[in-house]
Image 1: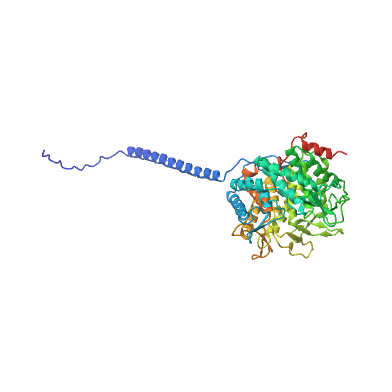
Image 2: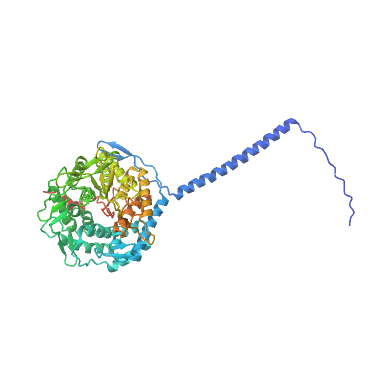
Length: 550
């Protein structure tokens, strides 16, 4: 092993450095630091942009149209578009509410018409799977495929329309069952639904007995015969709110009998004398004349005015007197039925009693009107209709926001006296999950893109969640919306699933609503979407053009 001598460590001192060299080195170090700082700033900016962009993707910003309005003559037109954002939380809330409702029906009332969540039992009304059929397109639109498929299988096997009840209401059967089946076929292309719709349409033709242009109020499916009430009267809204559905059945089957039969009603109604474009709600079935009864845009009158516009649009805008009658009716509403409450000047639509007395009362049902007015504006009605729609929409929302539960009463009295300190109070205090306000919020938001309509819809849905949801499944009505601890009404109407939840979903889900542009689709009065005819030579346009001939 070599023996090496370790050399002693020599500490040496650095030689002095010239000042210029020090300055040069400082500049090099400073430049290096600046480069590193900029590099890190770039990295952080990239992280920030990635986070923001990811958040935008999460909320699924779509390049969808937000409409700005520009007045041109007496109409308004769309002139500019910008993107808008989906509210994922609201969409999920509504979808879960639908699933919660469907589970209650499946658990407690499967195969029945109506579910009663508290008792967890079902009941019959038409013996025709009412809730199941009425819910089909809602399930389809929300992409609830499992629920849709289980309903489809049951309907295919068990829906027969063979009830022996002599009092099956023609109007309700048409808008809920026929409308539901037609919409389900249009969306799914499953011919089973069209077959069931045709079977039902053929039975409903029995309500037209050939003695009157108007259908009977009820029908017996087992005998095919219609039935009237003891007075021999029919209701304005009921006889004039079956045409969208009969028209669509004619279009799909290429059989004009349905459209021609139902369309005759409008020809007769057009000939009746009116008060400022408005009709009483009662009609003598035998003579076809109006009877002395009240004028209302609420119960028994409402959807006559809605379908004047929608049938005109659906059939290619060929029957001019439908448009004329609609415009005159809206002018009559403005001149004869519109008043303002005190002290806060809420616009409301009153009624005229049989003796000519004005009644400052408004049904929740009237809250369909803002949506119909807005829909008309999309089809070249005057901008003044939109202004009326927005004012009435505000009143309909106040009917919710001014109660303890934030749920609207079913009927309201408005105070028009100078000494008034409160604008309105309930004439009937119950809430039964009605859809009309949510319906109009959907239309107003679609047309104006004013975000307040989404906020109002969210407030109403939150109230339903808090006060109407039943923990074991389903949603119920409330006996008195002014009381937080009000008793429940043990019934979940089929229109809760068919209308209220569907319109709420479309109010927030941009992707879903984009599948139903309002220049190509019309919703029936039960919220079932049906396509608009664009070909003036089509069967429907031809049938309705003939109805206009003398």
